[in-house]
Length: 72
Image (cartoon, rainbow, N blue to C red):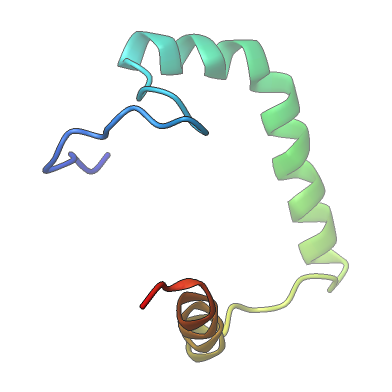
């Protein structure tokens, strides 16, 4: 896992960063839902329902969103 170079500030939306023990406990509590989500994604991919990521398209969308939301 990548190490953060700066501490993550507490955030009204997400709250403080979880400790490793808290993250492990969250994964244990949600293991069935996580596995079902992964299984569903695999089924959709096998059925041809997924689309390959287009990095250029994603970047263009991110730039449009950034321009739309930035404050001058």
